[in-house]
Image: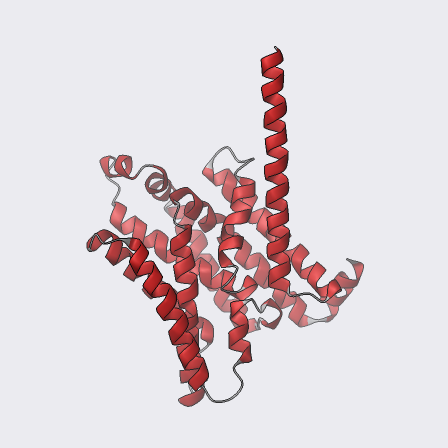
Length: 288
């Protein structure tokens, strides 16, 4: 750890990586709690994999048309929000099965991304690294974009806390209380899309769902309310990303995979300890 702290003070790319992990952790805890409560993890997965299409198109335009102002993350934001709107239209407006739309978005987004990456002249390995995370390659410009997305997610996620809470646990009750379920569901999908873009930078497309759900699942064992779960999962995600960065730097391992392994280990540890504690309580109650 001392070696990592020394390197952190010396290397700007490590400080950028640490900042990216902390920024993503805030949105991860807030939106991940809603995603788990609403049980729309599979939707987040579809949005996550559609992001590659937006990144590929943005990179192609950046290189071929010399649009230097365009960043792959801009394309990721556009593709994620577009996917969220399509899923919302299919599920609530057209009353069709979400599974078909999610599967189509998942496959088409990935395919479009691969095609545009293939047709883009020059070096494109850095774009493909988004599949498994490239937190060590985060630039100051990317940090500013992540910070802006984080502010949007934080403000809207907390401002509409009661509405999101209502539609996550009891949609019919929310309608009876006058909550516009359709509008707030669309807003929740858009917040999920923005959070996916944040997490893609840290752990990559393949492992977004793990970081979106595992800290929340572990925190859910201790939080008595949704806002407590949000706080605990955000703090846990921050610890996991920081520890994963430190361990991967010292052991020369992929950072995204290291973070997910740590998250999985913590989740299994919490579940195991909780199960043992529950069994002990039941035995004591039976003995009494």
